[in-house]
Image 1: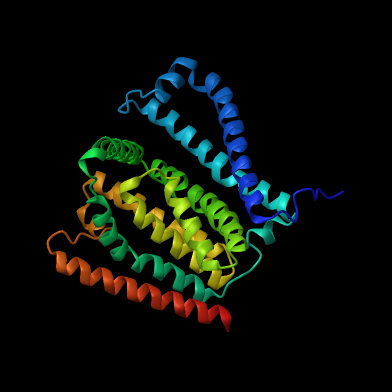
Image 2: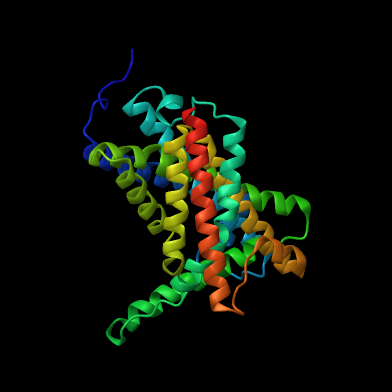
Length: 308
């Protein structure tokens, strides 16, 4: 017997239900992860790591990575699968995983996200220079602190000496977010707000804003919104969630490799995977605008390819 109680719900109740499922899933897996962690790591070690332990201690980083993986699965991977089953029954179809795009479209999508990076770097530099008036200095200080803490955490996560450690970082920072965040934000939330507003542009941009807001990194907020919007348009024009998942994975993997190369002192690799226009503001803008134009052109070709 099929469970159909939540099918046919209006978009707003669907959004509330989705938020509820995310919260319950996160809390449930977090509790389970704690129960598993106590005999594995020890209660003192676990509590010390979660309360801001010594990041130079490898055991602390292992504990934090363990909880990062569980948190990502509980918040992003499991809830969309549950929601898709509740709202439609056919998870594969609801999340747009049932369509196979043309091979050319995958190449176009990858090129689009790669060539979007210079423009994202320009916007990121501007976003990072954001300042608040004096009466909001306390808020700005808090936001900077949050940003610094997130950056410090990533830096400690990235510091690995083995190929296995690097591959695990790619799994944790690229694979799980690419699958989970695209399932949730493009597969579920974008669909809900598109149905709510009757306009896919609104659906794309609202889900992109929520996608960026959930990361709680305010001085990288705008570029993350733009990246989320790119993923959203790729989904709409291709009809397949596999393309934005691939783009998300490629984007995050490049970030992991760039940080890893930086920590290893491999400046040549770092220069390939990063864009630094600090020497010339005019050059920065010119390359950024060209990057945007080429990206829009590639997305338009993708749209025509999938429509043919």
